[in-house]
Image (cartoon, rainbow, N blue to C red):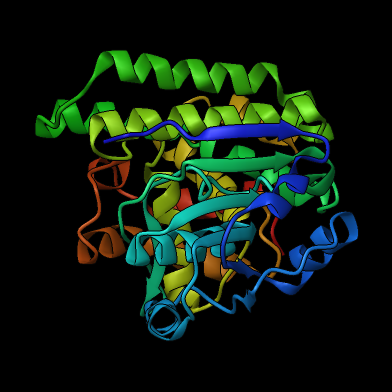
Length: 331
């Protein structure tokens, strides 16, 4: 059952970490931990540097981590997910301190782990306490903070795929939730300039939209309102290349590609992504890799038993692939 988190946002709210009782275990990485230390001199009992989210890695950590009373995730998605995994397994209090608003991990109840270079979700623990420190978050590179908008912008393609699945396969469709999701997308559109500039208002907007999106998905029982064929592009590209990329970049690429396949306002989508500052020309990804990703997308969706989407309803032809890659302007 969904539980709304207690979110404290503002300047300097991380000072509350010093008041945590008992033994504290921190899951973080070198850069976010260094940024936190610049703002708050704090020496918890144990600080663990997260390396990856492979299932074997987090299982080994949980088996060997010392006893603690509170686990704190300081950093991005991997740090927050590691803290969530430990809190879920140990049944302990958890406090999340995102140092960047690039993904929705600080608000979801699932933990994204990797098995054979493919994302899988385990666990069930809704974060209850978040400290959203504007000063800390604004120390991160702007383009990474802007990336937080990607998993809200994905509502555009996700709603299309969801409605298509309802029409073609009789999948449950909740018009009220779809309208609520569309309202989140409209709010993102209106606040694009704040998100681009990473203002306190823009940070709080992303966090609030994440909260609303997570609540909608929990109420529905799945992620249909925000996850569609655009995420298939992201998952397949990482699966195919065996490399990791910035999640927001992959989702933005998926939005560009799938709005064209859906014939779903692709020009508006590109304009929105530009105004948000989202990067859809993924650094390090070649034209050939995008071609291969699109060409194998249907096979990937079938083999991984993914949700029904436009990928199942429309053929991805060689002509479509060439036109799409050409519009991206990738070398």
